Amino acid sequence: MRRRPPFHSRAAAAAAVLLLLLLSPAPTSQLGLGSAIAAWINGAPPPSPSPPAAGAASSSSAAPSQQEYTALQALKAAVTEDPRGALSSWQGANVCAYRGVYCSAPPDGAAAAGAPTVVAGIDLNRAGLRGTLPEAVSLLAHLTFLHLNSNRLGGAVPDSLRDLQYLTELDLSNNLFSGPFPASTLLIPSLVYLDLRFNAFSGELPPEVFAKDLDALFLNDNQFEGQIPETLWSSPATVITLANNRFTGPVPAAYGYGAGGRVREVLFLNNNLTGCVPEALGFLPSIQVLDLSYNALSGHLPGTLSCLSGIEVLNVAHNQLTGELPDLLCDLRRITNLSVSFNFFSGISQRCDRQLGSHGVFDFVGNCVPGRDMQRPQPECEGFPGEGGLSCLRIPGARPAGCGGDAAVSVGVGVGGLPFGLPGAAAGAGGAATVTVP
Image 1 (cartoon, rainbow, N blue to C red):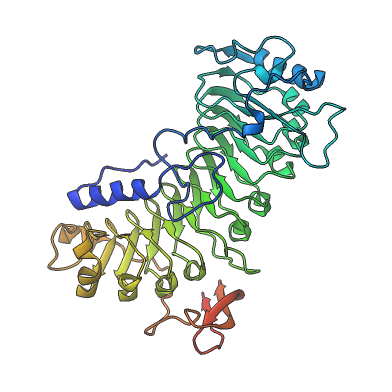
Image 2: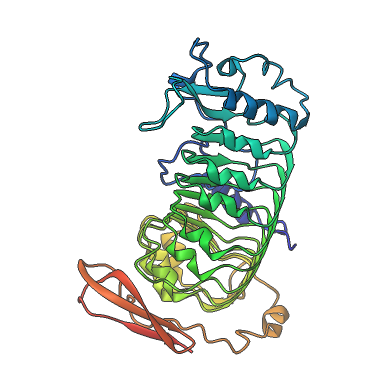
């Protein structure tokens, strides 16, 4: 896999540090995502959440069922190494006294075989456990969260997880799990948070991944490959991380059925994506962080990106982009980090310097801009093949159709001569725009 080279300038390094600060971690159970929403990509896993007060290792005499005892003992038996003694307390029938096990009253409307207390959650984050995840975990019928990040658990994710009807949070990040995407997770009816990053999952993503009603989807730092499904923009998730995999082909451009309305952070960085930056990305109404860096994208940046009024971080560094940087990008009011470094841009206006450069958030080193410092050598710029015959259309005009105003319109963008709609966009004139990319 192609990995990120070091930045070659002090300015670029500063921009990278700023991006990592913005993409700061959030606790596993923190689903109220703000401007620095849980898009952690590098570094240690997020801290363990505070368990619900009702489940604080209760010693109630009304113990959970024998079935739950069986499940926890099966989980303990599947652990081959426990260097920190995390499971040393997992003895006896009172499972609510087990370390990392949280008990509470059954969920509303749930039958608990007469027991007023059930196992509601397991948090064994950073315990250093080696082993596997057994099928018997599904016997924990009332489990609402399962947090196992930062261990050395491996093998396949059991299909029986689909039976955990109350599970809302599943964090298996930073382990050794492998095999194809665990399709059983898509059949967990209540799941809203899925974290599979930093494992060894491989193969193509099924399109159904983005049809699942999730709030957050973390798939970065695995070995997924193939094209990203066009269903990406149908996902209701606010955070989607696909970074540091082996994805190929284009960035999905199909923006239909009003989807993409909730997404705030999308990270495509460090894959092998090719083709143009789609015009449709400019119509993501809530996007705050968009990172396309370290791919092989080419052509011109579309002017529709100037429609991203809420964007805070836009990173297209280390691609093969050409042409002039659209001036309107530098007028985005909320942007705090714009990096276009190490491409082949031939022109950047002084307005970008005035608007962004004084704040130290505009990084354009390693391009082909005449008269600017820290640019590529001229022979390197002249020898670059350019757009390679691709047609990456940039909508002309002071401001692309579909930006601003209150009148609802349908903006049509077509790829390969076939138009498709962008419902839910708005235009000051209240009209409709259709663009076809051949």
